Length: 112
Length: 116
Image 1 (tube, rainbow over the protein chains, first blue to last red):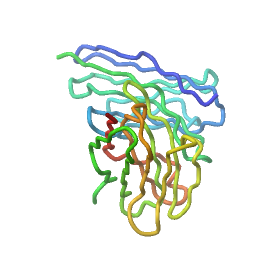
Image 2: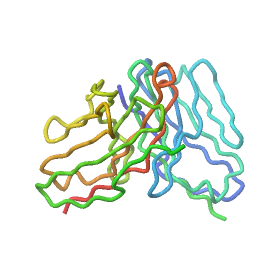
Image 3: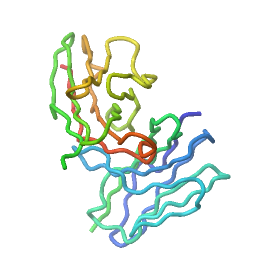
Image 4: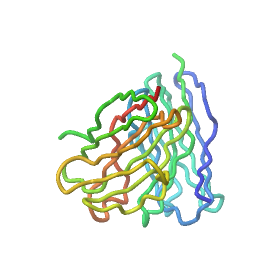
C-alpha cells in the first residue's frame, strides 16, 4: 500500500515532442505529490508538485495532471529539449509522516 | 546560501569496515532525512531526524545501521561491518521546521559508497 508505481522505465522523445510519465498509488492518505529530476551524479531536485485538491498544475513547460478517483498522476513535459534528458521520479507523501515514497524512476532521453 | 552538503562524495570500504557519511543541512533547516538509492532503483526512505531526536527510523535496517543528528555538527549515517549489498548512493535531505516541512525538501548530491 506504500508503493508508488511509475511507468515507463525509459522513454525516448524527439526534440520538441511531449514527454509523458505516469504514476499510480494505493494509499489514499497521501496528500502531496512531487516530481523530482535527477541528473547523473547529482541528487534529486524538486521540479513541480501538486496537492489532491487540484487536478492540474502547470509551471512553464512542466504540467502535472492528477486524477484523484483513479489514484493516478502524470508529468507532461511540453516542447522537450535535450537538456531535459535526466531521470524523473514521482513521489508521494502523507504530510503527517514526512517521508517520501518514490517511484522507480523514468530515464528520459530527448534526441536532438 | 549553501545547499545540503554531503561528504565524502565517494567512499570505498572493504567488507567488514565501518562507513561514516556526513550531512550538513541547509541553513535554517532542522529536519534531516536519509535515503538510499540502489543502482537502477528509486530512493528508499531510511530515517528522519530532528536535532538530537530520531523521529522515524522505519526504513533503517535492524542491524549495523545507525543515524544521529547532534545538537552541534552534521548528521551522521553510520554503517558498521559493511557488506557488498550496502553499495549504493546515500542521499541526505533537509527541510525547515514547522509546517513548511510538509512542502518538499532539498537533497544533497549524495555519497556513493562502494564496498569491495
